Length: 493
Ligand code: NAP
Image (tube, rainbow, N blue to C red; front, top):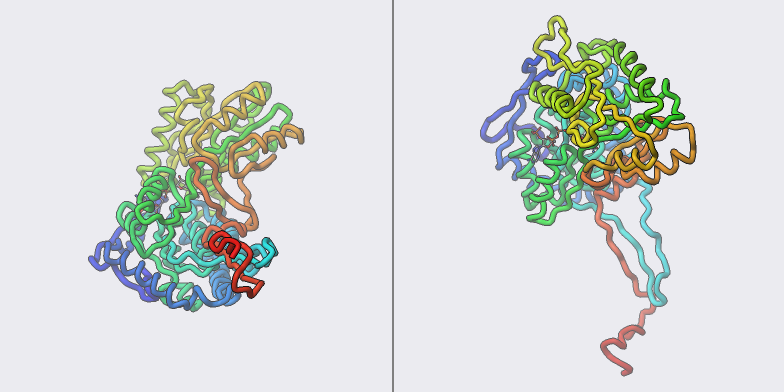
């Protein structure tokens, strides 16, 4: 672990294994932090914050360090992409072509944006004074990240926090800590002051909870499941910590009767399968107008047959294994429930046989046709390659069904009619609505949830606001001993 600028093992010497999901074998082990290690990290981070070695330097000076790290990540793209693929199971095509370059772009954007944050400029809101807004760092931020985008989720949360002058303790997922530890090496090399950037590893139930309870930690930035987000909200309330939550999703993908079905099915495959179907933005509920339902499902299945499930290190692989054996069991459990609750399996859902990778956690994508809006596969986040296709007949019906889940993260609408698209944009209760597209979010735009998908924003300048306090400063302009409003105490005297 990297705490206070030094590399240390857990004080009680415990370790946890790291697996390669493609082979099921252990490829490394990392320390399992003790409660004392968490306290040490929190104290060191607090000391660094108070010392001002980072919090009181200029945004430009901080940006220079973060940009150096972005450059190091870019220089090591090949190596880091391989490492990310070996711990997460996502295809090398994706880590090389998307995860790493996008992460570098996220960091470059946030480093630059932090230099041009606008508060309200001096304004004459009262006759006798003038006001200004300052944005100031919050203090020590505990950043708890998931396994699905190991390095990128640190970029989305720790980098805006750092750019605003906070000190940070990252607790990566126990499945995927290795690239975050590599990042700590790059931070050290880039010259981040000691205590400002720390990484502690170990089980969330212990290490993550301890961070949320620790009095030296001022805020938790959590990206993960809705269930754990609720737990962290509870724990944070004991010290009234700010808890920023980026949680689960259950994106609808709405295909109106006038949609380009070729484009919609193409987008449906990518929307459903990107990141092995383990992406909070994945399209999972395909509401297709009854007049085009058969055309859509036939083409979807035909195109899915060409998707190659296999060794994630092979450049021609489209999707790799799921993250763990227990997660695959969970996804298979959902497929079974979907069928038990009235669904019809149109494609896949079985385990492929892959020579040399018999112990990997692979699963072929599944397509289930169902008319049961209350089915678990329609209501709950599966986080795997499972497509639920449902028919609809009216605009009102599909909007109501799309909004009828606890989540509100991503959604998409496929139509050629501007009026239909714009009405849907307005009526869908989701943080993002794509029109004739599903998944992309440029670094400049926010990624945020409605409802139980959390609150707060990642990416964009909004993520900088997330990691700062707002301070009002009032200057007297009269120089008078007795100002006009003092009559409230002194009366007319
Ligand atoms: P998770 O089980 O909630 O775990 C996320 C992180 O929290 C891990 O570091 C985990 O550590 C830790 N953790 C687990 N239990 C904890 C507890 N009681 N207290 C504190 N920390 C705890 O989620 P996941 O399975 O890693 O990731 C998948 C989820 O992330 C999905 O729901 C997905 O939608 C969501 N996600 C959301 C976004 C977004 O932007 N909204 C982005 C990516 C992912 P261990 O690994 O040690 O258990």
